[in-house]
Every structure is written in C-alpha cells, then in structure tokens.
Image: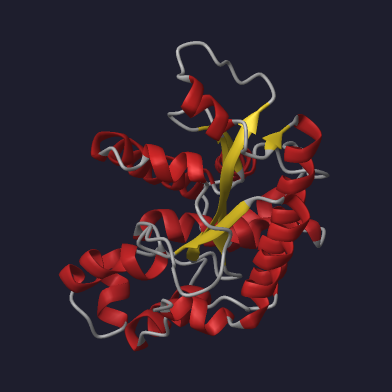
Length: 269
C-alpha cells in the first residue's frame, strides 16, 4: 500500500521514476518519512545479483543498515549523496523537502557497477551475476544526479509531494511562518497551538523530518536566502529573522548552504 505521501504525489512521481528507469536502466525508488521503501508502484526489480546476495540474512542486514545510514546522512546534509554501498556498488540518495522546509522523504537510485569494480576474491558465479549490473561512470552519474536534482526541485516547488496534513502540524507551520523573527521555543509554540511541550517534542520529528530547533533554523536560513536575493543587507535580514547579528547569520548561512551569502559583503550594513 502506498504511504500518504505517495498517494498525494500520484501519477507524476510514478511517471518520473518510470522515465528514469527507461533512460538509465537503473533501479529508482522512494523512501517515506520513516525510511521505509514504498512498494505501491512499479520500479525496476531488484537485480539478480542483489537478490541472491540478500538471501544471506547477515548480508541483507548490512544492506538495510547501509540504506538507513546514507538516507540519514543525505537528510541531515540536505543534498544529493552519491556513494558506494557496503558491497562496492554505486548508489545515491536525493532528500526531498517542501517549500516550508519540511522533510518529505527521499528518492534512492542504485545497484550500479562501478567502472573500476575489482573481481578479486569473488567466485565466478557471483562475478557473472555482478557483470549483468548496469555500469556507472562519472558522466552517467553526473547526468543522473542532475536529473534527480531537477526532479526533486520540481516536485517540491509544485507541491506534488505534501506531508500528511495533521491539524496540530498545520497550526505549528502557520505559527512559525508568522513569528519567524521572534524568539521561538518548543514550549512557547506548544502553548500557541494548544499542545503540551511533551506532545510536540515526541511528535515533531515524525511530522517535520527533523528536530524543532533544526527546523526553525532551516526555515530562517531559507527565508534569509530569499531576502538576500531581493537585495536586503545582512544586518537587515539578521534583525528580521532572529539572528544575533550579521556575523551569526553569515556563519550559519555558510555552514548550511556551503558558501557565504553572495553579493552581501560582511562589512555591509
């Protein structure tokens, strides 16, 4: 059964993933908020090599742990992550975020054989199965990553994916949007939406994909990027969005986006 997120994404996501499968001959799938792979739409079947290897419970456990670790790292880093799995195959994770900064799930592609794949230490039978995997090269990976990046941004911008509409979560979103420049605490927001701090503390990560503090920070930085692009100064944006000063904003911006605010020198007012 499809999770609520995929039901709302509907045919658009399924069509896009099907297109990627045909173009790249690669397994592309979707993981929901809880890190569970959705099974309610057609994707390329798991490869014969991986299916055979996963019959070993210990090997399968390593596969699941590898998926979870890289999903978490991509989610925390908020960027495409391409890596080699525990068995040396090339895979990638693309975390999805809505316009409000809430985590929506992730697209994962993989089961690609690297060009420098060694055969030493592998039986002839395993090697034959492995050689049937699609081969990845730098150009292929770059093209696939860019296409998936576009897909991520398109789906998020057009609200094709929406987080479950929990009444308390919607109240939190509205409150944060209206008070982004104010001092925001979990206890204060809980009071504003008629819930207890304990309720919000326990349920916030599942609904928003991250902690309360990180979500507020991400919202503020997304708003800061928009305001700076409109020509506002670092000092103005820092004052508007609850940063201590423009230096605090610049450091947080650089750490989050991987580069300093462009076109807004630190010395500017």
